[in-house]
Image (tube, rainbow, N blue to C red; front, side, top):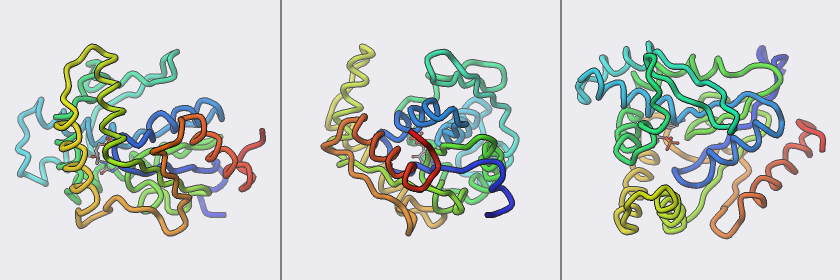
Length: 232
Ligand code: DC
């Protein structure tokens, strides 16, 4: 057991955008009553704060300082999703646009930004446990995690899911454009020099292309049970 072991186990869920990580992480955290870290939100918030404050996207040092000092709150809501508040303003929806996603992926290539967010991410580890969703949760931020999941789906399937989500919200979207954006972000996340997206050596890899959310959830819960992290 490591130093932090006494404050509860960690389940990490890493994978590309649109693989269902966010939904699964939320389901696990609420079923288990554990804490939840949406690390992608922190990169998205850094991108949004940079835009709001006119910070130059070519200035790694300024972006690193911004990341380290983000004034952000995650407020629990009845729906199970968190309200995201940046400098007193509700930005829950603002950070979810494709544009901010792509900007987040760009700032996430910078070591100064990753370092600036590192401790804040680790501080989410608390009793009775943590579900951490991101790209490098199992490889860099919580290498000691008791269960590491790498969740993927084909780019076409992820684009389709995103398309349906946007349509359900009454928003316009074009499938080929969504697919291009997904592939561009995958490439950027997988090919950066620092903490690239990849499965941890000891990760349980799940391809959700042909699986329902419930199937994915049950696969992870079974793995958690086998490791004596949860009882059902
Ligand atoms: O999971 P998401 O789509 O909200 O993440 C947005 C971007 O943030 C993603 O394209 C890359 C970056 N990110 C990262 O580099 N490391 C993480 N642990 C989480 C997200």
